[in-house]
Image 1 (spheres, rainbow, N blue to C red):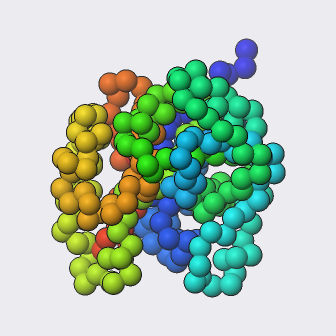
Image 2: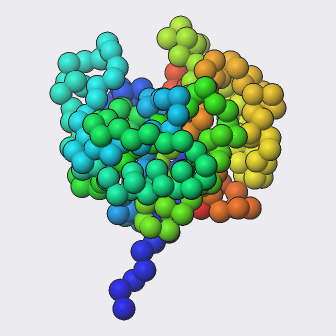
Image 3: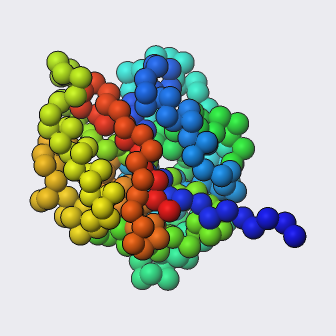
Amino acid sequence: MPNPAPRQPALFISHGSPMVLTKSSPGRDFLLSLASHVERPRAVLSISAHYVTRRPEVSTAARPKTIHDFGGFPPEFYEMQYPAPGAPDVAAATAKALRDAGMEVREHPERGFDHGTWVPMILGFPDADIPVAQLSLQPYDDAATHFRIGQALAPLRDDNVLIMASGSLTHNLSAYFRGSQAPTEPWAQAFVDWVLDAVSENRIDDLLDFETKAPHAAMNHPTTEHFLPLFVALGAASPGTPGERLHTSMDGGVLAMDAYRFD
């Protein structure tokens, strides 16, 4: 008998600046090793901080284009392509799962890969031979809403679909561009440590209330779109199972490149 398909985890990854594509760093090294942390999936469902809508939207494109949704980078960055096929079947299953959970879902037939999707994929899965579907974030909604989205998507893991939630554990770009004089700013490290403890101890309620409970939450996330992907991955975890931190490092003293696995 053939071996059964593996049950995939849900991952939260920090995708970093597009400079991670060429600039050596611990975060880049981790993304280069991404495939080693999972069994090969039949498809990936990406939930990116750079695909935002008012209501959940899935990309049903069969041949998604590569979107260069950034500015001020070297010319070669705008020539990079990630020609992976889309995954219309996974998009359809995603839409059905969310509708079955009582959510309104739209479909986008042409949405391409934004850099929150293709940057980690081009480093972790450079052959571009794994189909990828995408689901949008709703930055106007709260962490609990995204946790429920993750709960609805959990069965996809049993169909050998890797859920990849792509954001940033901390994301204060103003502080980043001002430049930090410290290897790690204390306010950023305090947030990183709090998240590690809360995830490791499976403190779901505290995590959902991070804007009140986490130290320096507003400083680390002036807007929440880069942290909300964590809650999709968290919701897709098996109930009662704490997450595992796969990587931690800091870019520019303030941008945490942490990654978590949820089984």
